[in-house]
Amino acid sequence: MGESLALTLPEIILTVGAIALMMVAAYGGDRSARAITWIAIAVLIAAAVFVPGIRDAGGVAFDGLFVADSFAAFSKILVYIAAAIGLVAATGWFSRDGDYRAEYPVLILLSSVGMGMMVSAGDLLTLYVGLELQSLSAYVLASFQRTDNRSAEAGLKYFVLGALASGILLYGVSLLYGFTGSTLFGDIAVALGTDGVSAGELFGLVFVLAGIAFKVSAVPFHMWTPDVYEGAPTPVTAFFASAPKVAAIALLTRLAIEGMGPATFEWRQIVIFMALASTILGGVAAIGQPNIKRLLAYSSINNVGFILIGLAAANREGVAAILFYMAVYVVMTLGSFLVVLRMRDEADRPVETIASLSGLSRTRPGLAAAMAMFMFSLAGIPPLFGFWPKFLVFDAAVRADLTWLAAVGIATSAISAYYYLKIIKTMYFDEPAPAYARSHDVPQTVLIAAAALFVSPLGYLAIPLIQPLAANAASALF
Image (cartoon, rainbow, N blue to C red; front, side, top):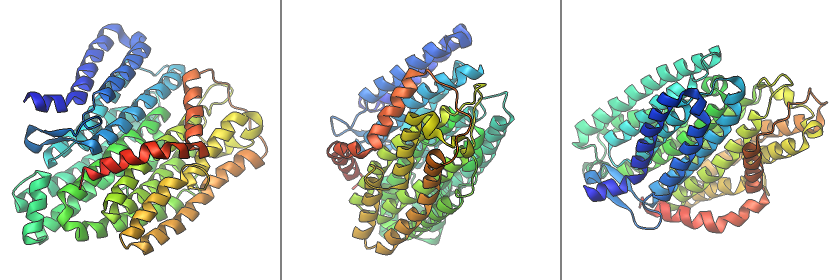
């Protein structure tokens, strides 16, 4: 028991921290919100320091229910970094609108506990508990801005569709348990490999993948993403687009490789369909969007499609490419949303239209340069660093004899480049729109500059650091 508790130390730290900060919030009220936020960031850092699997081999806790290996460690570090940046972004944005409450950082911490359980799940029930803990926090976060009807609508849509996805997932879990006799990933893999994949197991596999596809915003289970991203408060949208995305992708990858490895032929066809549909729809549907948050929602769907190409490869190189992609994707996405947080008119009200970016290079040249770097990087245009993870997933697909899939991915990448370049054209070649209000939020400025440097050609210097870590983490699943 002691060893199992040691392997779950990050989740224990986050849980205790969340409960303690909830008590502080109850007594200190919203006046203590800013202090609670910085303490919550410190709790996330402490959890990251004690993640097992970084300096050691990790292990298996609670008889296989919880796996603390290097794959989980890599994913958790990304999740905690994204959650901490999401908290920094929220302090400057909410405080000006008077809606920042002390419960916000507590919800982020509880969501992080769920995400930690998701990436370490070795059993379908652990998977479900972690996913629901993350989702319940997310439903509240989406509707956090109570004075905004769009936020309330986003929370309601997310809750209703999330409940439907949870039902689909649970039905799949019950089918897999009924036909394999276990909910442990290892036992399911043995059952699938012993007698082949029966019709019942295939249906269970499909329903489980459909439920998780909702969480990663893969087509055709993406319908909630544009509406929730647009309606939720911008810092919440930045959080949704980063940390939960990492956790859901890691969960899907572990389940596919470890739990459903012998059924690779069956699930690969589903993943290939979702990858193609996501890259095509994410590329085409964003073209006519006038709202920057909706455009970034479709960008998120598009990027998930590229990540799924790496999963379809079903090899060690594919999983390593997925992890590398997620590390760069988190920085590109958070950087883009940090710029969106700066989009405020002279009355200090949030502005979300792409047209308001017109001529930004002349009114705010630094902000325009950072946004241009994020857009070029998301488009995968060399020499920006966003090119390299796309190259890795396409290379993994070619190694798995899926050259045609890589070719389609490259073609859809060219389509999606159009709307990224349209934003750059708006900022650099259109007549200036009314200038945005000046911001004096130093932490946000530092984060934008750091993210821009990371996605610039200087980011290639990080390859010798990230690539071995991603390869080592991928090896844990094989």
